[in-house]
Image 1 (spheres, helix red, strand yellow):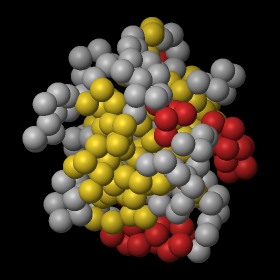
Image 2 (spheres, rainbow, N blue to C red):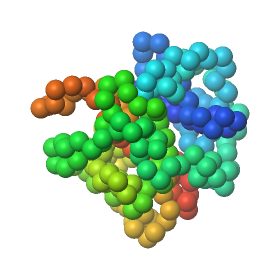
Image 3 (tube, helix red, strand yellow):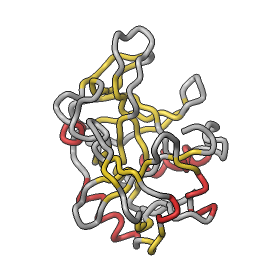
Length: 225
């Protein structure tokens, strides 16, 4: 996200469905993070107040909310949060996003994408078949190698904890530590999503491209920047 804005997503603990709180015509301010006195952080239970369903494929999770009514209730325990991740996670990407997700060749390798306005979801949790790997590409962007047994793809990472306050500069020390923990064999579950439709250079149409939104590790499920 651009500096000053965040994207928020969570899970309804009763229905086990993903929810993305959004605002009509504008982004969600970073002032809603609990760092700035707001309700949002990893593992926080938040009452959104009254919401209205405004989603359409693949962003079926979108619900419009009022920031003034969003209230933090409590923090989940690490064990409860990890249990939720395990219950939500799938073993392959098509189980999350639908059969229309496909491998696409991009600069420097392969990624995955949905056709515009197609797919059954835009958010999910992946229990990868192989250990993911993080790195910084030549353009200074954080990327991850994600393998689910069907697709091996290089995707951008949007986890806010991996960037400085400008939301652009990677925190190299944090990246190195994550890679070391993953290499040691600590179990990892990925929050994954597809972004707004975007037409890459050389492509003929807009697509919703895969990204990793968060890294969750068993040894510290609620780790916070």
